[in-house]
Image (cartoon, rainbow, N blue to C red; front, side, top):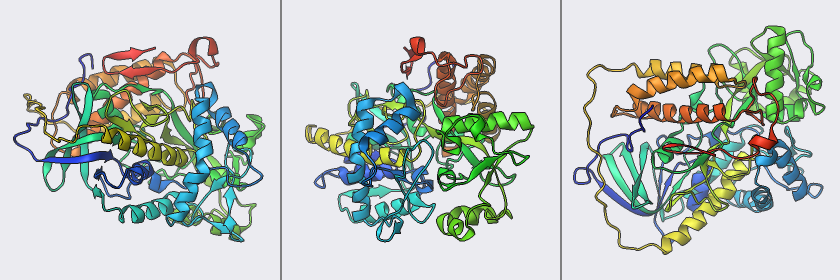
Length: 538
């Protein structure tokens, strides 16, 4: 990838494809995207696009819950302090305080809109997770919080007459003209390629977990938003900070299902192959240490015991309580013959959450005029170098709301004379020999897991850069006609950004652990790394 990637993934000409116009374009139907749509003034038209079904997003798979100060014994200062402790000095204290203080109002909105959080004696039943100093996690259906929140949000969105949702519509690239974002190039299942022109665009496209072989993320998490923003010249930052969830179900033949942090919050222990409870050897907080600490401890213990996983032990807990609190996990494990009330659960870390992304301010404003962003596609300053458990749905709510409101205000200040612009992308000569895209993708995800995973060093990452650059040279120059090819191009683009940033940060901080630079180095590296098309900025 010595040459810059093509500006647009596919050829198009404005006289040959359909055009659509909307006041606000939103890409993504996770919690951030739907909350942004609700926040837009009802007088404005909103078009929301998703490449899959409306309910297929990382938000729908969230198990643990959503964090917020919802109890009289809790305080905003405590939630802020816990977030800063987990994320370190790369957190933006003002952003953390803003998100924490807006949390109760945003969560209560969900309740008013029909979300059925779990109650005990008529009040919210609050759980505790790693890194939190008290119980402040609102959850639903035991361990299906995301599914219940998204059910309620989808129902609420369906009532909004100004909002149109188009499913199975792949957003390929952002349209830019005279230094502004003016919409997106999409591939619609009904119309094929089309140009969507918008006064303001909000990118809520989710994360990048499918870059790794071991991941809790759904198949749709291929970094499309990160890649299209990069191609459009948008600033991204913190791309080296990929969070690996400590406890992912590890069974041959199974999907890498998340074993929520709430299991440990309710008393589950981590033991190795010999049954030894090891977390106190690594951190006085034991199983409730932040995720980066627990993930590193698990990897170390796996190495000590020469075993491919460790185990979650819940056998000492009341069986009926476990079944009531975690019905989804009980059912998932039973598919593989594991009764979590009597058996150990095999787990190991897996890629879970991307802290890096589009640099945005406290209103979701990106470096490209006309483009806003919210959710996992962004770097807001909330998470720093390590996200605190159950702060992700909260960030999606708060920044989705703010981006929707800010984009509304900007749309009212934009000329109402819609028109198509003379943008086009010419076809290029294509190599005659076809590529085995599945083989390249499998090779990429294995490479990233092996060389740019929980533990990193210069030699392994240097090898990863060489391989990714080689693949980029003959994959990115092609113009594919279907989503699998576009996703591979996006995965390669984002993988290269992750590796390059991880190579540059010569220290260990949060989720970024370098075996060749194992210490924190605030003197040199207490700063963000930003990237744009054309190079890395310090």
